[in-house]
Image 1 (cartoon, rainbow, N blue to C red):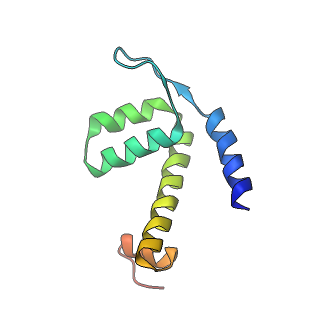
Image 2 (spheres, rainbow, N blue to C red; image 1 turned 120 degrees about the vertical axis):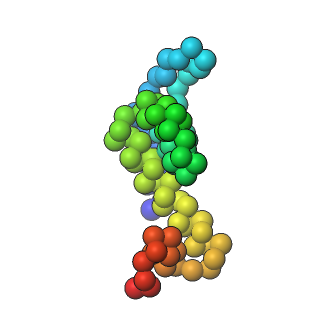
Length: 98
């Protein structure tokens, strides 16, 4: 099941790539790279990097990438803590246990 999902997401990723044209860097950025930069910049309150990452892909693609990053982070923390993903997500958001 996860292989089919991964292949589907891979096709989506290829379709959502965008060209970046700046004086320093002229290359393609994928939505996962944009999401990683965006989320880390938000965590560090770096508005310049936030603005830069938002130009790399469409808003829809960035939203998908951020969502995928959140899912992967929760799963990784759940494995590390030996807890359920639901418990970890609720804990990260400061919600009471369900």
